[in-house]
Amino acid sequence: MSSSNNSNQPVVPSAREALNKFKMEAAAEVGVNLKQGYNGDLTSREAGSVGGQMVKKMIEAYENGMK
Image 1: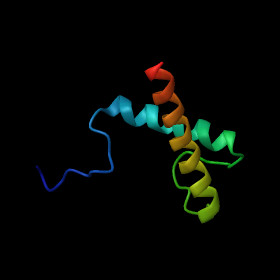
Image 2 (image 1 turned 120 degrees about the horizontal axis):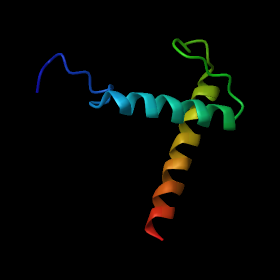
Image 3 (image 1 turned 135 degrees about the vertical axis):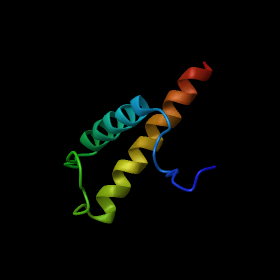
Image 4 (image 1 turned 90 degrees about the vertical axis):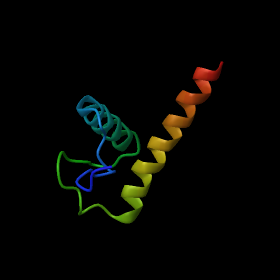
């Protein structure tokens, strides 16, 4: 594995766009004003709410796929 490979970046460029869209939707659902680009001014609570909503939606999608 190359040392220049950033493990936080999706390998497929279109995956990055999909993840960004997914993150923006999750933020809107929990009432967090997420901007394109830098969001370092979010509180830990706001950032955690977005991440938690994303996980919740992924679990729901997985469970719906099992049916």
